[in-house]
Image (cartoon, rainbow, N blue to C red; front, side, top):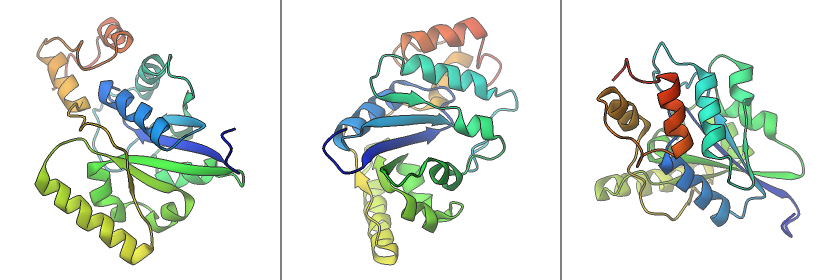
Length: 208
């Protein structure tokens, strides 16, 4: 325990197709700055807000997350959403992980902050966790949009998004897949074990 009355548990969900160094950096900053006892990494089965490749196998994404976070203390890679099947709604996941002795912190990226009020049962999500966000870019126009949106959430729902302080992580899973498709080196984008896994299983070769 950390001296708080409740366990501080982080939740970092996403498609992770594939997991990359930006995810790892963000997860470590999340753990440190929110003083988490542990952090769940939860790959989605079917993300409600984005299209994924018809050839996608969630088990590959889960395994790559296990490899990427194998040496990060306090991280638990969970198959909760994959095992549940269907669309992976954050509300359902938070509800399942809620405990009287636990304080949940949910981390999302810039795009999620801006669209949070379109999510399934988003007002209930606000009641179940403390939302935090991490920047994926360094664009002053988007900064202004985020500030306005966070202010709106606070005024309407009394919820304050907390910011994870780290350098903007300008790596995307889309860019990694594109690099693999084009036969370019991805060693600077993903952890070494993830790179080996992608090569061994021939992932992303046939898609852009």
